[in-house]
Length: 345
Ligand code: XLS
Ligand code: MG
Image (cartoon, rainbow, N blue to C red; front, side, top):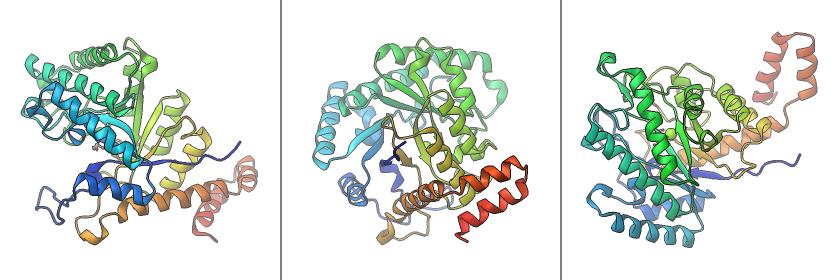
């Protein structure tokens, strides 16, 4: 089989300015045009968007105005030679989403979430992509007794069905994350995402996006999540990054915390042929707070470099030696084989 040539993607939010809950920005913001040119210069092929990355201040604009601005963005992307990979409704910022979007206890707020997500589908169509990502940020609870899990599941299915009906070509990717901002989120893992797909009117159009850090936060191995999703043909997008254990969401450069896990993720992508049906490798990474403006792009460039180095490592892995050790159940030396391969010994 010929080797996959990977294509890369990042979002405008991946050029964050360093704000955290304990302090303000440490870098000046860059304009959208600057980010677009930077991605192109780095050799990236695509950009991913939140609805309000595509159309800023989206809630203050009419539908006609939103679509007009989406068209202007499409022209800008075409001119730059950058593709829109996907669009995601930002359902966690507006006052209407304080208690969640689709699972909010207030009907008016649920309607807001649905209308906003339908509009995201319209924006995606203008931008030339059929892919929508649902990171269900606030679909969960701080106080478990405040919502019924059974009702929330039904509400999520209802929302997915409404979106599938709104655009009959669109594909919905659920991006699971077990916590943060919520104490407990509904749909915390890929298993949940793929299971709820089966309850919808068009299961074949509901898939998933795996983010490495989110799998780690769920106590899972991202490589296993990749293998599992790809066994269903449902891994339609990917947010590679890294996460140092069970902490706040770190969005570290790919391979930064656990190189061996990053290697295993790349091996899983390789063995399942990720990228062969046009899927992109996106890096949902952020610069460290200490990073200076002149190094604004390093985390993206470094993640891509690490990814490509690991692709080379996956392809040069001594498979026969490994197979012999596995046949002999000598996992002790298999472990060392992997370590020495990664160390280049
Ligand atoms: C946050 C998510 C977010 C999504 C897109 O944790 O990773 O960045 O990828 O809404
Ligand atoms: Mg993400």
